[in-house]
Amino acid sequence: MKHLPKWTRNLGLTLLAALAYAFLNMLSNHLLLPSATFIALRPQVALPFFLGFIFGPWVGFFTGFLGNLIGDVLSGYGPWQFWNWHIANGLYGLLPGIATYMGMKKIRTLRGFVLMEAIVVLTNVLAVAFAVFTDMFWLKIMQFPESLNSWILPAFITNTVQAFVLVPLFLVLAKFITITIETRVTLILSWLMVFIVTVTAIAITWTVWGDLTSRAASVKAFYSAGIVTVLVVIIGFIISVFLTYRITDPLSSLSRAAQRIEQGEYRLPELEKFSARSDEFGQLSRLIRSMAEKVEKRETRLKHQVAELKIEIDRARQAEDVKEIVESDYFKNIRQKAREFREPSRSKNGESQNADKGEDESGRI
Amino acid sequence: MPKIVSIHSFRGGTGKSNTTANLAVFLAKMGLRVCVVDTDIQSPGIHVLFHLDPKEIRFSLNDFLWGKCEIEQTTREVFCTAPGTDNGGKVFLIPSSMRTGDIARVLKFGYDIQLLREGFTQIIAKLEIDILLIDTHPGLNEETLMSIALSDTLLIILRPDAQDYQGTAVTVEVARQIEVPNMYLVMNKVPAIFDRAATAEKARAAFQCPVIGILPHADEMMTLASDGIFVLQHPEHTITHEIENIARKILEQRTSPL
Image 1 (tube, chains in turn yellow, brown):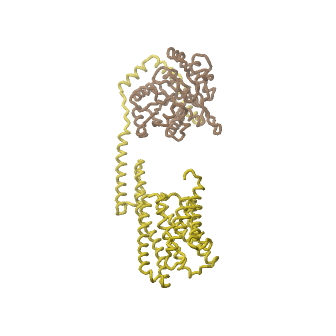
Image 2: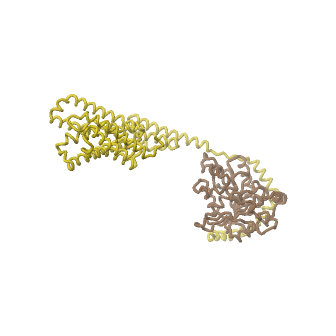
Image 3: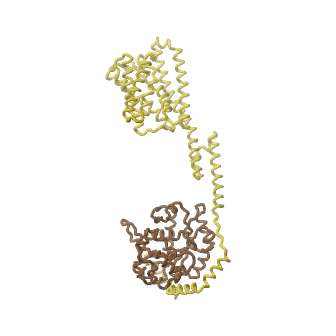
């Protein structure tokens, strides 16, 4: 794969992915959601999102577009009957791809994770909105609000929930999400929450399945419950992000503080706001701050000890050496000369000092 | 009035020539016309820092002292401030002879202080020199004492080292007896663990002499390995700032007896 030019690789990848998408679409068209004739349980919806994030908008778009087209053919609907849904499926890959073009990097932080999930939800909203509007105003297949329960909500709810859970899973496997403490905690909390909500929903669906397929009024209630599910997932996600932040924020601050200490900096303002907390992070923050203070004090003390420069001079030897030089003839001779050279500025002390001063003030130096 | 500054150290290897060359270039960058005289006739070396090829040296200080040439024939311009920022700053160098015969002759006969003084006076007048830096020979021999006698400022370079301390103590006392008007200490190759202010105060108290520079021991200086002028290559380095302090301190002082 590595020797191939990028576009060849992307083309091959797109075709393979589109075929897989089509095949899975065909399968899931037989696992239709209750009452919604054309909308299906489709875990494969995560595929174009995923490819869009990893390989960019074109791979993402054509995987969704071609996959849906071929899937429709395989399912016996004909290639262009629901062309606007091909485009909607294409959007699933296009928008995440555009996000990476706009500078979205590999996900390491809570912020990156939230951004990714927000893109997933927003893409779902836009894609379904596109399909619904073209259906209503162009193809005139749908009627609003009559189609809300039979088309729009089923498509939106199933796709959103499935993409919301599966896209991060794929991204983790592809290492687009790096497992850090921030991403790990978010993943744990959000998956746990979706798992509970989904299992509950499936259990309820099973118990009322017979009634749902026979009575239209219950269907409406069921999808109202569905939209509640989405809201619960989104609110739950926001709560889990907040909880994650409460754990990861002190952790990354502690890690930054440790780095500072390593570089010999002992002022740790980033730990101040956690010190009042009563949990382990509060404890740890207080401990590290007091540790840093103590290390700083000890280091300053050591520094003073080490930097105590000692200058020892043997005064007796110095006097001897000086005496030997200054009593020599050549020294006396030089001293005499030096006095003569300096004589002009030394004689008549008062005057010459004034003269010197004047020169200094007017001189160029 | 022009200044004459002797730069001296009791022992070799203190970084005396290097400090002189850097000080000269810094003063030139401040717009002064500087002349560096290498009177280290026994082991000349400052020309290397200015990339002056010994073959290019036609006349040296020795030739002048033996009456072979005029003093201005010995000078070489070795640095001038960049054309764009030309402020008239220049460094001239009067090298010493590197011929072993010449060196032996100096050792044997010495040279005449009166003539040296005249040479300095002439070169200061002819090249409009603002400040003359004399790179002296280590120790306290006759030539060194002459240089000190002719100077209005003596800069003594020492390292944090017991032998340097002892020699510097002797030098300071001897220089006092020659009555050099201004005398300063510069400590070189000071390990970073020593606190600058405390070290300066210690040295001032021990030698009873102001300390105007504490140059830290620096890898950058060692890497340069005498191949060029440090202050030009590391304009933001602590050493460069210390050199600047030294330059400004010297300029504050009273001027030449000549």
